[in-house]
Length: 292
Image (tube, rainbow, N blue to C red; front, side):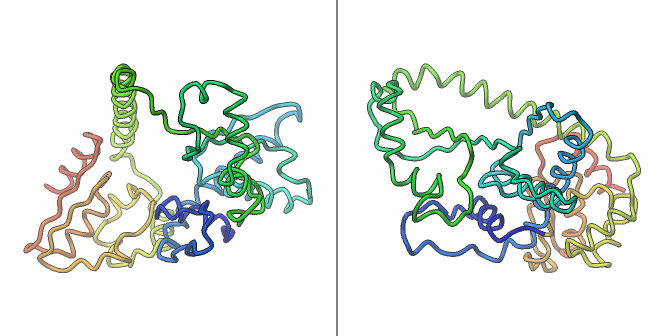
């Protein structure tokens, strides 16, 4: 289960809909992402349950640092919200904000363009806090306040830097290096997942989750027990994709190929499926399975 406010936040991150718009005609969330929202909730409930287990099993003076994305915790939705439900289920009615401190960062276009102003803490703070966008939306005090709680207890609001071209070029190399480092780390992490592809998993649990995500018995039979535990669990594309015989399909982020196998079943010998993934070991596993 997830609250309407949490879905509103989640859907906005998926669709790009500006939930902090000060305009009255801001559209409501689109219901098309309700099913993939279930994958988000699985992660949030798992994290909240683990957090509660840690808190309950440790001395009260212990402090925990939980790193999570915006959809998991901003406006006290996701993990903090579910944590409070678990607490209430144990008969504890404490406000989660008494125990949890949510920190977040957010970039917004604020009328603060001069470098000297940006580097002056007093001017920057006065300008940011005077902004209707920040006070009214991000802090949940005005037209954008469709949330019961502000976006975070500690909010780092920043504007895009617009220094001179020379300084931009100076920083370009470090940005590229950082981007390459992130890409390398991501590849290594997913390659580690790919190296476990041959390790047998819990077929019964995999079938139960895939059934919950809307995969039919026919689609699960196509995947087969030898691969079904290699699903990624982030949603079911076949609920929306009307794949027909002869179609050409590109599966971006294909992982270990579970959805590619199902797509290949639908396109038949007349069609073609191309699976693309950043991790080489995942791709090699998928190619080996395809040849078999």
